[in-house]
Image 1 (cartoon, helix red, strand yellow):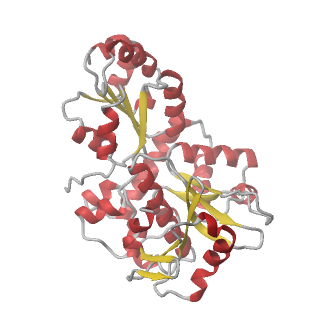
Image 2: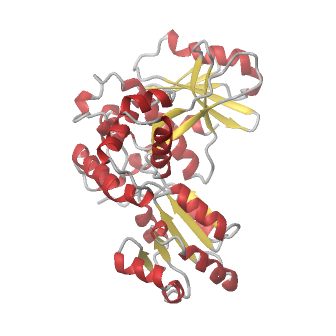
Length: 390
């Protein structure tokens, strides 16, 4: 097993020296436990997934916390959310940084609990599955098709698991365990169908009515189920960039999966040779690039600054990195040969926003060469991070 240094480590250590509580959220199996044990080796580790441990924490929180006068790592804190209310007076009394490290695999529930009880007392970071940089540091880099099929969950890489089987197990565990913590869904088969239909819309504008109709559920139920998938780090949305210009812009977000391997599994892709032939190949590649941009932000302790641009005439740029008034547009193309059409969206966008583009624009593609054309920095997928440095 390779023990990969996670990019987020320096940020997590630094924040633990500034706040009494550090909260790390992220998808299940993104590596939160491994990260905590590595960078906080002297802290007691408590897994609230264990029924007896959880029951003790719920039944007698004061006695439970009294076991850890110098704090602890409390894993999967959403399993005993009321514990956070008892942590607050402890950290206020002790006035020491880095006392408790909390982890969780649900973002909205944890955020609500923490915002109410630990406001101003905790720093929050998000740990997603491996990023490209982390994989490059510890493994032989596979072809793009293999990455799209395998995804980025650390356990699949560390243990060299067969992706289709491992992701199938991941999905079944999610449906049977995590889902029941979040909500009561009577028809699990219908929900599974809904998730698979969502994967069929990866990288596309969200059409709630279409998704609901195809699943056979109401618009309200579809909205609720999407919120559940978002809360449990299965999907995320990229919002459209709105500005006061005369052209009509779309208002719907685009739907992406946090892990591209899981999306491929849900599309019933059973080996990497099927990836290229899949009609959603371009969307899958786009999803992988957008997820990498999101990981880059989170791994450096920043919030998402990612948007996309599209107007009613179909002019589009896949990804915008927005820093204050400055915009860095990035076009994403799954082809290996650069053609003139690749620049169409960037050209249109530049005509509108040139004054807000001090660093020009970027293009990511599936080829091998870095190039510079006029104001466009062109990078192959494996050099993707170069574009995020602007």
